[in-house]
Image 1 (cartoon, one colour):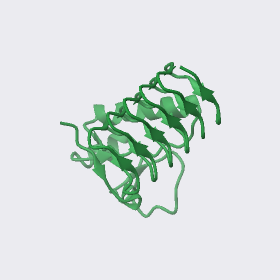
Image 2 (cartoon, one colour):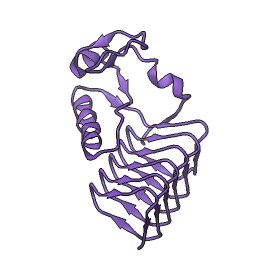
Image 3 (spheres, helix red, strand yellow):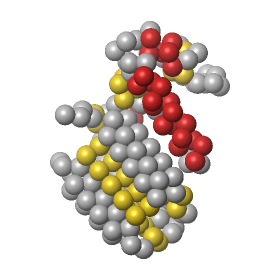
Length: 178
């Protein structure tokens, strides 16, 4: 059975080290030079990706980093913000992130490494594919399917039964018919 955690946001950066190509002086954790160093030094390592950006390149980068960390023995944590709402039968994939005020309704599914951002809603029976991103305030209505690596823009509405292709980009505020 898949495990996922509900943890306060500040805990996401309280790990033993971080990997970043640019120095982040505000972090008081030791900097690892590679995923292998970070995970190799901590064989029990669990990870949460913090790659920012909503362009296709950043979504692909998330998937690549996830796969590399898994290959090195890391375990991806699925996290749900304490202020998010989640039905008991909603499914959340490894490494997925559900932000504050987001809502996952009955039988909703969020794929591996996907993001359901602040205030976004995934309604009953809807599916969000692996490494897809549902931006703040977007709504994916009943039985709609968002493909892997797709991006649903802020405030967009994906109507019931609609199908969004893998890697597709839906502009902010767009209404997507079935």
